[in-house]
Length: 116
Image 1: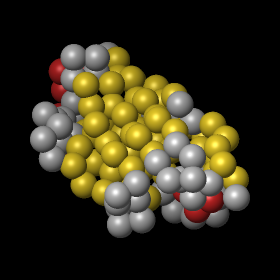
Image 2: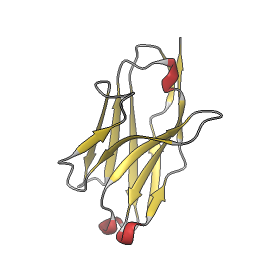
Image 3: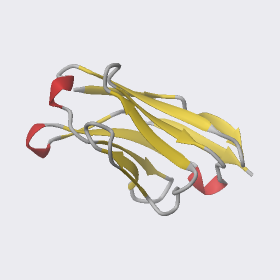
């Protein structure tokens, strides 16, 4: 499974960005997916997760009400709509997919920078 993120960039506080994660390869093995982020000097943290069918989602408290995770299985693409962005959202955002036997796949990351 290969994962490629896109959609990152520089935005002012209060603005919006939409991240995409395109999966390829053995995509039939993908179950849940999620978004993580890592800010400079900090550990990687989970942002949001979504089940295989998209029927259930969960969010970190810091992004609840501002971010929305979704997926289009026909396109094998996952999204993260980020609204009301804050400078503390600045980080490299990573796409993650869970495969068979709990194996995890990661994308290369996309930078999101929110200016104040």
